[in-house]
Length: 112
Length: 112
Image (cartoon, rainbow over all chains, first blue to last red; front, side, top):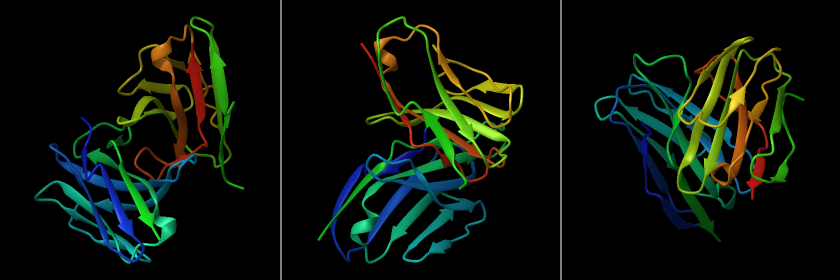
């Protein structure tokens, strides 16, 4: 079962902040975040393990709320280069070793 | 350079004509996987492989075959392609099934 990402799309001005959510109805063990620019392959951003850990990568950070079975990706002071489609990939607790289940993606457009 | 290489990048074919999409990685990764990406549906896993000679079905395996005879190669075979298999296909590899994925640049397949 695919995790649910919200919003589906967001348009921002350069410098504004964005939050992308990834929710699951099943218990999560880890959440991966990827960004895909138009015409390119998805690129790994970060991984969150269960435990409420928050990670950061320059102005992009993420959190994992085990109670809500949800992860959020935070983009601070967005830059034009942040435009693209963001995917979360989830690994379920007690699941098999079949890899990640991806959400449908969130399209992020940053305008000058 | 560490990479996942897919060929061809673009392919147009007709219904029923067998085709193979190749995928090769030079990172000595144990885990490899195939995804299809369709608008509004995100990334859906077709097949995955934990190691040589070990393959298993993902979420959407119907109409596809794979093999893993060597660690570096993981070809995707469509024995009798149909128009509903028109999609962007992405091959990925990682150290383990829950490690960050490295994606190839994709193969855009059109079946008429």
